Amino acid sequence: MSIAITTRRPLVVLSLLWLILGHANAAERWSTKLDGVITFYFPTELGLVVVGTERSLYSVDGETGEVMWRRKNVRLDETDVAPVPGSDLILVTFESGNKTRVEAIDLLNGDSLWRSEKARGAVMQMALDPNSGLLAAVFVQKARGKPRQGFKRKPVVHVFDIRNGNELWEREVENEIEMMPAEWGTDDDVAYTLDNYRPPVFLDNRLYLFYEGLTSQDANTGKDRRSEKFRVNEDGLVLTEADPVADERYIYVSGRGKVRAISRTTSEEVWEAKDLGSVPEMILTRSVLYARTGGQFSRLSDGDVVGRGPYGVSAIDVNTGKTIWRYKGADKGITNFLLPDDETVVVADRDDLVVLNAATGKRRNNFEHDIEAAAFMLLNERGEVVVGGKNELAAFDLRSGRNSWRARHNPPGRGLLRTVAAVAARATALYFRYGSAATTAFRGVQIFNSVSSLRWSGLAARHALPSLTSLASNHARDYARNRISSFGVLSRVPRSRVISGPQVSRPSIDVEERLLDRLDPAHQLDRLSRFLLRTRRLASVRGDWMYFYTNVNGGNGLVGVNVNTGVDERSIRMPAPDDRFVSDEAAGLLYTSRDNRVVAYSLTDRR
Image (cartoon, rainbow, N blue to C red):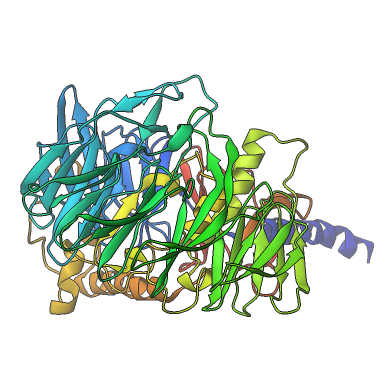
């Protein structure tokens, strides 16, 4: 008996150790080792993760961790690589001295569909009109330096035919504009970005730019330039102007204390509403334009979030520009605002959740929310208003004022260490990648980004996050695509049961480890069809979980709170993530990096 026990004891101990280790690591779905320290990565709409190391550029299958392809012997900064919105392409700039080569690369196999040597510098923002095939890319040269306020450059806009790379026209922005550092808190040189400006947009065969107020030109020729100049980024604060909105007649823009209606037919100003203050958010209904004034903004000098008033909400008649009413009762702060139905406007200040009559602006009710430094609101599926900050959420019934539930998760560590605060803010911000328009307003609200043009700015991927209020104000408006415009190998899937060689150009000799080359035609089709299926799934997915960086089972990790119920439904115990970790709700995964590895954790496992 004793011999049997002695013999089995190591097996029992090993089994228990295996179970413990297996449980601790069960949330890790895959880990892929690359050829050097990872310098940047970002997910794409196709479910592929683009990764840059000190030596190479990779495309990795986000669901499996398999390397789709590798472009070796290239050292790229994060501003050198950008996903073309709503497509299967990335735009990559290779700089050598004063020369720049721009390549449109197929995300699936690494092929270079076209190349151009017309542009100089790094690509900062883009807009794509899938109907005309026009791609507007904004480039800036020598955009590196120590983080500070006052760094200025002249962007140059290049408009290409996305199908073949032919350049239709280019135009330099008239004056130097102030740029935003990709990160703060370092003495090293960093990349500068245009993330402090709204990205360009195509509308009515015109290209609109927002770097010096509002400028538009003919989309095909760049001629017939019209502009309305006003200061952008007032007082050194980021995104103090709202993302423009539009109806069938006008495009509405804010800036310099005013809201302007610009005719979509003539590009002339029709009316302006004055003396509003900073307007960082607008919601357009059939007859009224609601404008939030004041809020929380990131500061260009150091990245800190500061409040600026006057705080309130104004209702503007879209036909005349006259102010119907103005609410000025917000107390020393304001979040984004909501329209839960056509009779109600909701806003939160430092202390209270305030319910306004949409027709008169009079306060119907207010409830104390007791959220420290309230930063955002959203509507959940139950019609409740959820008020949140960096470490707490609370849901309220608008009729009774009852606090339905409350969830709080403090970040690990003591004090307000910048790193911990940044990670906690990024965890919270993951929700806004997949929040739907229903979380802001009732059906019928017209959102500017619902027009044909698709836009991209690297803001969401940066270390330097804007305030959560800004993220809530602009959440998900670029995310839900009904279709992906395919220009590479993916475009051939509907037309053939056999995947043949590339039709546009020969692959670059620097591309290797191409996964599709190792698959037989049938498996190639299966793999490509899966990416197409993902695009349909992405268009309907909605993230229902707000994430918090906190203590998890004796360690650190992320907890996902369901915004509809307040229940902690998800948790991931993991080492401290890097400062750009990001989720993919369509795949149910969260991506982070460790030295030379990309790691995916399951979001659906419960710890």
